Length: 459
Image 1 (cartoon, helix red, strand yellow):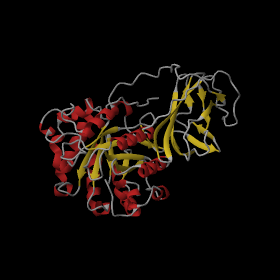
Image 2: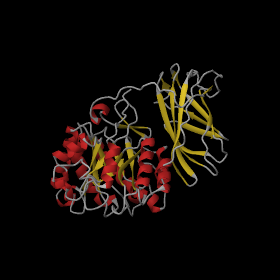
Image 3: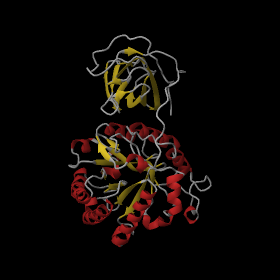
Image 4: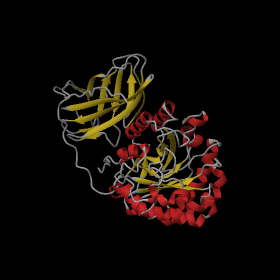
């Protein structure tokens, strides 16, 4: 990961408002801008800006800056409206971040391209006021963190625009872990391991992977439904969200399991409808099937969930092992042009960092400005679940997900004999699920990322 020097600026004199200001926007009397490049690859890069208002409150803001090299172009942006004319870039706040109190900040990110050098932008303005100043100036302190579990703070979730939003209608990112198949690794999901996940790992969610085939649900529907519900309750008791994963894999056409899906989701939705912490993932990794086939399945299963739990978030798998079609040589455009006919839904995206790199990150970045996305599964290794951990690619992925506020669950919170597992083999026979002695290389990296403080907005 390569970072440019932060560009910060403090406005000293008012140069006048630009025509881009709305009637409600006020001139800024002081501001600070941090510009960073968080990753860079051949011909492309990912950057971000953080705008801090040091003056009077503003209701509506527009940031302007100049790309000093004609080869630098904005490709996709998020958390703001981005536009470029020649070398001039304009970034305008959106509904949920357009108001900046004194000392408040807003962050927005983008992906871009370049053909020569990639120098830092110049001539920052906020609402027409030039920003200049020192990198050493102190930023006014932000609000204190809100106490409570993820579910306590955020309450029931819903989709707003392209984001997962909390009870305050603010975008949030959930970070957590996925179980392995509960038919194989159920011993890993006991009181001690789930306490560790919630309290030591500080995970926001537990993805409950219930395989349908592979000795799973089809062999004992009542038993697997009961176990899923027990794990939902366990997550709820610890303040974590529970992502119920109907883990279809082979065969890859989810319509093969349509009737099983209707039976299962009718049961778990009716039983868990009163809970704040439940999210439904109705098909894990569709493969060998067209997007129209997946859409047909989703439009039959979602009404079953809605009949019992009308307000819950539902996640729909996508083509090519939930790659938005990229692994099948397609792209996100098939979903964008023909979305599922339902509301309060998101689309799944999966990646394995050692196998899926720049073209997959580019697809995710493009899609994130048009579709609500949730990375319900990813690995730090190859798509086989094995091989060496790719730390560089994993870090680039996690930085991108953080920038886009896309929630994720890592594969897997288990002691499987594969490098994607968070624990070393044999760990689940003991009682330690957090110390360096039991964590794999992948587990140590994920624990360090997940356990950093959340920044859930409450106003």
